Image 1 (cartoon, one colour):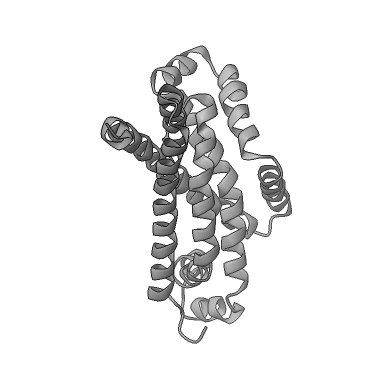
Image 2 (cartoon, one colour; image 1 turned 180 degrees about the vertical axis):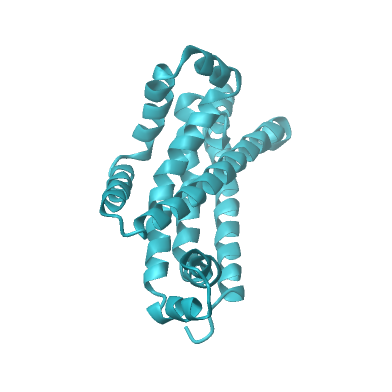
Length: 224
């Protein structure tokens, strides 16, 4: 019996959990990035320094360390009632998602900030001249253009995020890499198992790159 016939469903479940962890982490990371970017643009020196410190901390510590810190560190200092709730609701998944989201939120924030810096100041001035408030000008005029410019680095970061989810296996998240390791250990068909897993990752990442390229073409700013 082929490996796919026997363990195909298990591998697909692992892939599904990888995708769920990726989507959850990405959505949280994007919201974190937007918040960091807006806080940094307030021109309040204390906030700028705090955001910069957070970004540098996240970017200069390996993601695996962040995952360990949240799972073993933060998880141990939570109130007992909250610990019980987290443990009863797939705490390893929650902590992995939080750690990955914070890590990539820092990178996404820099990508969005670079996009904002590429937009001419006249865009915001023109929006303000039309009667829009600062917040409305950012939301309706500046940020949409900045996000279009930032699509390429955001897509690249998204691909890295998906691959980083494989680190969640070290705390027991049964995503694709965890499942692959378990199957290879049980069957001793190591090459075949990891080859199938590799193909799955390649399909997902190439799909993301294709989607990012398509979005970039659809949302491309004319004249750029």
